[in-house]
Image 1 (cartoon, rainbow, N blue to C red):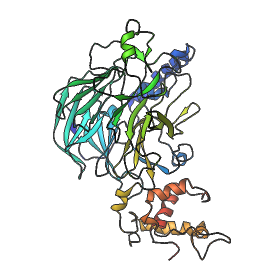
Image 2 (tube, rainbow, N blue to C red):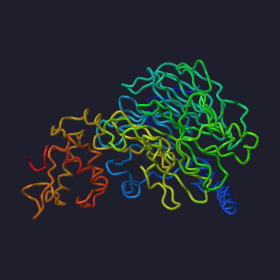
Image 3 (cartoon, rainbow, N blue to C red):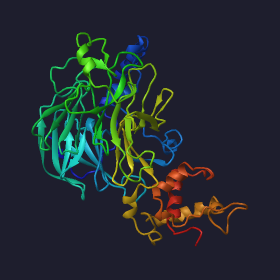
Length: 515
């Protein structure tokens, strides 16, 4: 039985004795990795080995890599929202907090909403502790639902205070646990039913438990269990498409068939559907190991709506619904590609956008890139979620961070809770008057006025006035612009602290032009 954690802060990263002991084990793993590279292609092992073997991660990316190496499309901004080691699945609350599952620590943590509009979570709290590999999360009718590896639990959740209360209820017990795919993702559907995905126990096999490699459905209280769909090897992420109400799920294709087969899948999951595993892969291609004798089932199976790259490991998926989403992405879905291990060259390690055409075709485009360059990996995306203010969050269990992807129209919750523009305490949550003073000095030192003030503009320059900037931009937006300026804005050599100070100053008055 899990327990409700006290309101203490999230523990800092630390090196434990298993980490020291693991040095020797890591040596053996590296030797095994080298040996695998001499085997045929289908047996290739190529992944961040400490992450694959032990769940150890990399250091969080430095601020300088955001916008330079790690990139998002034009019209979006990128920042680090919080550090949460081994973060997995996400669920925003209607009030703007963000719930994060940390299965390897047995915890669900809460990231407090960004009230001061600096682009970072205000605090991190352990909400639930002592759980059995908690993974999927959802909120429904005053309950927080959590998918453990062998059960579904729920507990009362107060969104206004961000606190749980009362006893934890185990509403589904005895789910098949462990195996190769131990994560349990859950969502409450538009029909009010509880959906739970259960991955296979193996790479490819005939399961003894029919609930494996399947999507299950229950009443919201855990009653009336049924198998909704089968043949889904490991459907980690799923969401309902706006407008149609269709259920789409990612699915990880099997391993050990070579670099480029089979594709990972995006499936439109229907009640009673059979998606082919383990006898068929991709578009009803007979499995070379288990397909013989099952040709009829393979032919009758439902092919994927879209094929991701082989072994890219798509996990979380979310449709973008908020009106602030740029038109080209509205109603598109974002999918997190955790990244391959069974390829001679790495693939995935990114977030992609999926655009659905009127003919049913799905167009996959890069969205968050740069976590993989060549064979160098600095991050592994797990889940994607869009908050109530339009901000997009991406979890990364390798770097141990939550990325914040904003748009010009996003962040309205933070702005709405900030003081009025030009208030004495500062606008958009700017309350640090010392930072404002330091920013004013930086503004003068770097002659920012030559581009932003009419009377002091450089010769031949038409100034870009920053009138009432705080009514249009958050602190995080301004910092992002200073980090990755768009031409003709020059690159100003500022540290991260100086960027923050200058942003405080620019937001502290209705117009730096004095008008």
